[in-house]
Length: 150
Image 1 (cartoon, rainbow, N blue to C red):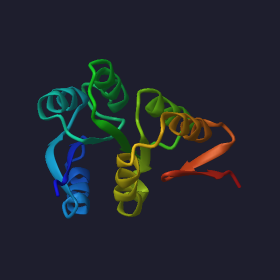
Image 2: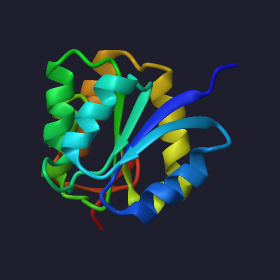
Image 3: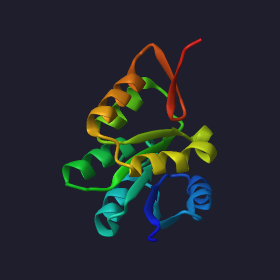
Image 4: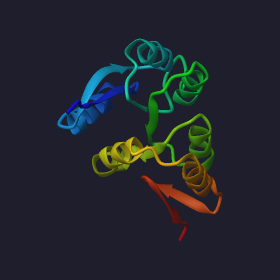
């Protein structure tokens, strides 16, 4: 069985190394890049199954890079792995086509399950409802799933 082909994008080399160690048993890491422009170039050249990207990166942020890839017709699935938990960031990520959003604080437990879940290709209407529920102002984002503010 072919392993899932993953492209990593994060400006912190240590994060890429940790993610690679987490995913290596189940995935093939085709490349790691450190900025949004390099992400676009690598994604266009390598055509990965899944892109795991941070938001805050030099040259071009991950949201804008994902948006450009979407507009260019990329079929890669995008997952954001980031420290940002603000609902506006979450909403922006899903608006550019992300299918999952994982907090770096929970990457050891949530990243591989998120990849498995998006590979099932959840119907688009379910994705839209899920994204809308995450972006609601009265919720706090923690990992993959929204939790009520206490």
